[in-house]
Length: 226
Image (tube, rainbow, N blue to C red; front, side, top):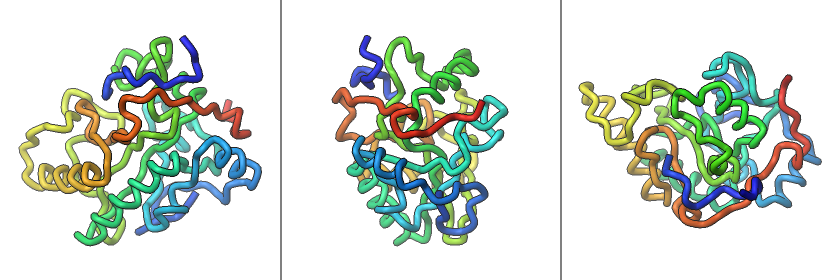
């Protein structure tokens, strides 16, 4: 298989924002920005400046227990995908909410590490069969925040408990069900499809059935932590 391709047949399997995001990188080096642009990627907040960014893989608070992204890791998406995210943010802002992004473009090098660590969980698609759409910059992991930047109650946390993380889950707490409806309605209206098994993961519908080249971290000059 061409390892430069995110297969359309895959299962639907830094910067400040609103409130006070806990983690975000420093200014993105100009050379990384230029390389990303050539690959069709833009920083999310170029198009959605008030989206809150908290890239979970820049910290040890993820399933691997260590940072996978370097300090200053940019939050990148394909330009059209970032535009759809901006549309979802605008819809939520009108309702007194907003988005917090936990992951956008994911270097394949990092995805390989995630799969190697958590392959038994089912959270991370096996690269031997095709890369995650994150690796092409056409998927985003996000949650709902209020106008003060506080994360709202959801069925699970990020990368947690797939048994309870289904997008159509009937959570016993009505507030959780409402928050999930608000988030998914905004993302779907903007042109995203929620992943059935992970309420936080959204795929850009434009590319759902199209093979898109993955973009390697090394091609942008991004080096993962050892």
